[in-house]
Length: 333
Ligand code: 1CP
Image 1 (cartoon, helix red, strand yellow):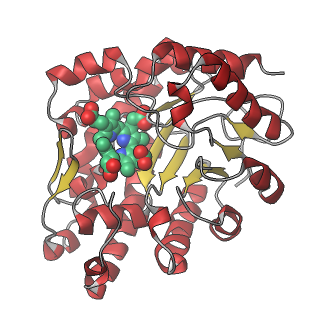
Image 2 (cartoon, rainbow, N blue to C red):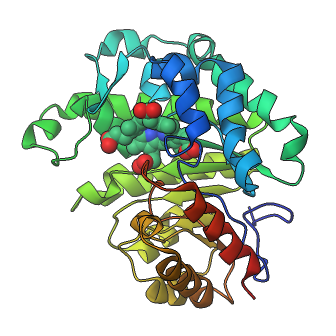
């Protein structure tokens, strides 16, 4: 589908909509207040009133053009029945995979387990503050979900050969992941999501076999989202060849990471581009911020461009820097 009017994903080169990955989160004092009282992260994601409130916090504070639902990519393995916990200063910890159980799961039971996420989307999208703003739903890409399900924790140190050992497990899991990612997306769209972003946070871990693990499975999901009539943004973080990715996977827009050269991207890629700025820049000073933000805005001035970062906003980010960032983007001519 072609990008649509009045949506952050569009062909307009005169305006730069802005939202930030992980905008509803730990850098916000009002989020930390709620988090303090709600130690169980999954439970918090499944509290539709609080999840909706958290989703709207950055919209109320900064007036971003898109609200990303407060949830997590790991709600998928959770919905499939794999244990998912978030440990302080460690990150996610997943339980054993019971393949037979997972393969016998039906769509009704998956939806039941995570339906509070959809309830949170519905509640958020009818809030009056969401007039003229997009509700952004999201999923992890098949590869990134597979990585967490098999590795069972963050693959920060890379993947060992052991990861690929059980080929049958991998191929059977990919079938299940694709089926339930589609369901999870459909449920979010029916609840009111106007855009879907696919986070492939660990795309950069793959040196080869990109067709098998990234291009083909992500293409299937992208095709599916297009059929639902909403635009789809892909974020294949760390992938070497964004041009090739876009030609094969054909998303409506692509989020670039901070490791790629935006000047090369603007020449190579025809679809709307999102993001790029290194989130570390928000930890520097206002002069440096202006310089770097305007660099991206200038490079993409004749290209449909959604302002965002090259990865999620860091917890140490100061509120004033985000306020400044928005002013710079809104005042840019
Ligand atoms: O308070 C806390 O400690 C929880 C921190 C937190 C938050 C606020 C986690 C744990 N997830 C989230 C919310 C979240 N996660 C959102 C919605 C909020 C928003 O964006 O405004 C989104 C879109 C995500 C997506 C997500 N979760 C990704 C993809 C984006 C990325 O950062 O690459 C990934 C990889 C996850 C897994 C995850 N969840 C949480 C953490 C700490 C992690 C990363 C762990 C790792 O490094 O592997």
